Image 1 (cartoon, one colour):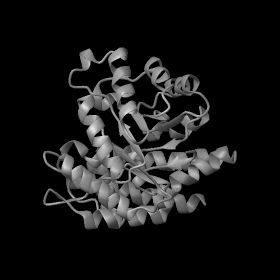
Image 2 (cartoon, one colour):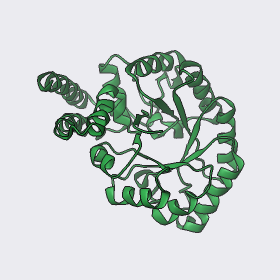
Image 3 (cartoon, helix red, strand yellow):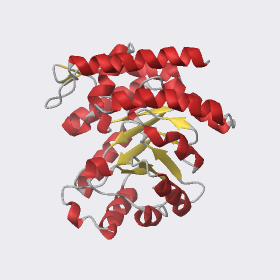
Image 4 (spheres, rainbow, N blue to C red):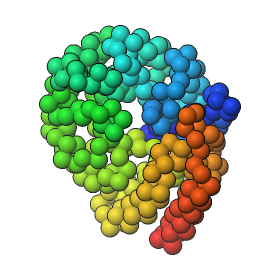
Length: 296
């Protein structure tokens, strides 16, 4: 995988029940926009609120809706190694291509480098699809640093990592310890362009659900050495990102509603943005579209 945008898709709910019809509609629009694939059951998909049965139903809908040449990644991290293996193999049987696995973090003081190395290695040994460790200290309180990533990158069934820290030096270390063929994704939009300079393969950022074609254009501008144009586009994208992402998944859902997708309400206890926040999000989207028109 290289130069790919894989949006972590929201899970659409109606009355706190997954709407598979709305999910199919959203996927149809994203695929039409040209994304390389989708990440289902990530943090942006509110996966922590779903039962295992609901998670598998989501993956069934995604597989039925996404063309075979597109990548499907499923978040399958659980608190135990055993449950992670079981869920990963279930979604593998449903047609998932890769599993994204965050670290167990409830007993975080016990999650040493040795413990996490064994965890990921045991999973990689036992599942039917490649696994991608997910480093997101903001959610887990744990940083999967270069020592750990370098160790587990030697496993043939661990082809890459997703990092949400925005730490460019750490991304460069991941490239160093993982080697040239190691796949590195960022989940951090504000540092996306800078991350391309240190050799990432693409992005799995929630904000790429909004104007995904522009995030793909940013990669294209960078690869073709149109750096000033890339910086101009990045400035526009990040102004929008800053407004929407301060509200997290509920901000993405609100923005998607405004862009013709179905965002809908989050699962409780999350609540939709208040009217003033929605007004800010709407203004950010309109400003982005207007400035994009003027810059082209």
